[in-house]
Image (cartoon, rainbow, N blue to C red; front, side, top):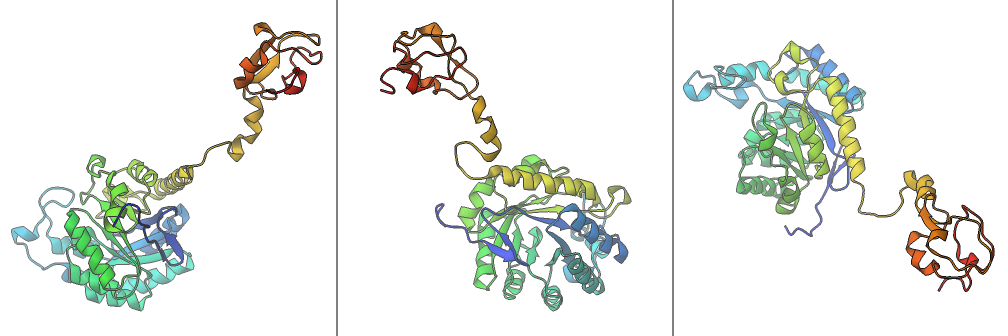
Length: 358
């Protein structure tokens, strides 16, 4: 797609997403509910109160996402989950399917959008029954083109995380989504490290991705603070996703790199303020500056002078406030005769100069 082409936006639950819109701010609940439905419901409340546009779930079971095996390739080495089998980790982190209806209903009562990342076709079917307005494709699933096609055939928008993905893999995922009928596509810059170092994000790609893939770009942020998200906003991010928890000290699979409610609220304020500050490439006084125009410099007479006086260097100065002629007219005023008497601290105007403006 050429750099000059318009990037198509879309909407999720009536919220416009794309160029010129504030970032769509997603609170990723993940497995931080710690297996308690009451905690998951409280997380929705806290995310809504903190200013999130949406909360996001992950819809899988341990058996739909992996196999139960303790073979080396099914065992995690290093990082937060060192030594755990994939099946064991996903069993803990999964959001039970029989919770989904209650979570969707509660989010709607709180007027916050709710959707999910499906990890197999059965998850898409469940989420369709619940009226999910969009789907998120996780970074590890970007190579699962049949899953992407399945989600896209619903006609809903897809948000695709691109952690670890090469350019050709991202392009294949986007093309698959569009060919299958997705109602819009966004791609998220992501680093699939938990947590991820900010220097790995290479946010300069946010300016390149929309032109390269023909889709709005955003950020899935696994860093430990909000700096990367604010920088991404300044670079035009259309979507920002951040993991969310009620209290990191309570633990949870993703708690170590998740924001608490007060931190998420601060992020929401900062992201929206950063977006508002971008504005448009316009010049001239802004409404907040109008009252201060009077304090710009202008030309003033420095002493009482009679009519007919030839103005010399000491007779006129550029000073504040700004009620006289602009300082650029100083050379045009010096050496001219006064048409009338003037007083000390009187603003210089053309009507006081013989012959007026020339």
